[in-house]
Each structure stands twice: as structure tokens, then as C-alpha cells.
Image 1 (tube, one colour):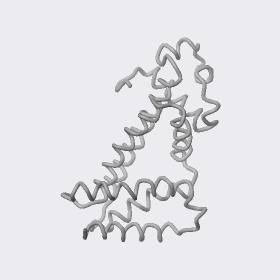
Image 2 (cartoon, rainbow, N blue to C red; image 1 turned 45 degrees about the horizontal axis):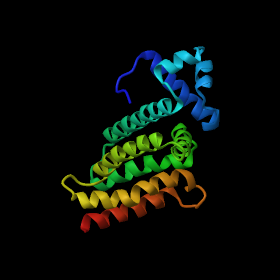
Image 3 (spheres, rainbow, N blue to C red; image 1 turned 180 degrees about the horizontal axis):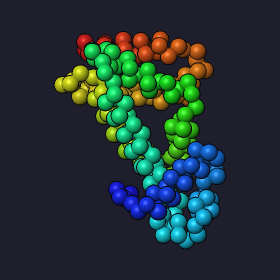
Image 4 (cartoon, one colour; image 1 turned 30 degrees about the vertical axis):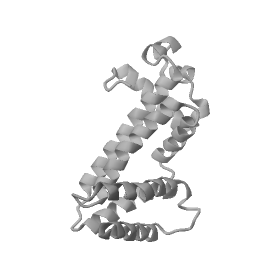
Length: 191
């Protein structure tokens, strides 16, 4: 995966993400991306020789944007205590479960693709490794034992991801969910 790319290659990646968001994985083809951009298929293939290459770059591009947004979110939180910081961050993260955001649509499609492409699955795993560090680093006190970071990630990351899919269906109030998660984290603090 390239860390820098040309403006045209970025346009190809963004067009692929638009198709993925608007029409889903089944509609995402190299020819479809080329048509959306008014480019030839060979021009798209110049930047991305095959669909997996394009998919991996799309995932990396999108996941970087999500990670950057998470960084901005944590920077904006002005809390007087660790508990207030945790509450604000968890409320923001669980809010995605109550609205069908662009992030949720794209994540669902990426997860579907990762079941068929090991290269995409590897890219997704790399994102979640980074996100786990960001998440636990933002929710735990500085100097917290690394085993506590691991234990928090073990429970919290799947919960937050799953909440975006089933949060409304289980009938659990978002505020109640956040309070339960806060209790869990406070239990880890005392461990």
C-alpha cells in the first residue's frame, strides 16, 4: 500500500468508496469505478492493477480517515475528570449505532469483503490494531498496565462495533449502555 499517491489515484480510491457506500460491494467493479470517473479501465488499472489492490487502498484510505476523525474527537473533548472524558467518548462512539452513518455503511461492506479477501482482511486487522491502541489509550489513565489495555479492548471493541449493528434492536438505551461500560472500566481501574 502506498503512503502517498497521486491526485488521480486518490480520485480512484474515493470513487470506489462512493460506490461501496452508495451501492454496496456487489456493485464495486474496476469498470464501474472507471465509468464513474469518466476514465478508461486501463487508466484505473495503471494505479491499481486489480480489484484487491484497489480494495486494500480504499480500506487503508478510509480507515486512516476514521482514525484521524477519532483523534479529532478525542482532542475536542474537554472533561474535568477521566470519567467525564470516558462518558463523552463512549456517547460519541455509540451514537453511530442509532443512525445509519456513512461510516457504518462502509464498515459493513468492508467486513463483507474481508470474508472473501485475505489482503483486505489483513488491512482491516491493521486498522483495528491501531484503533485499539487509540481507544484504550483514550479511555484509560496514563500509565495503566498493558494487560488492562488488552482486557478493555477484548470487551469494548467488539461491543462498540456490534452496537452499531444491533444497538437499536436490543432496546438498550445508549446512556444505560455507557453507564455499564463506565462501570466496567472503573472495575478494571481497581484491578
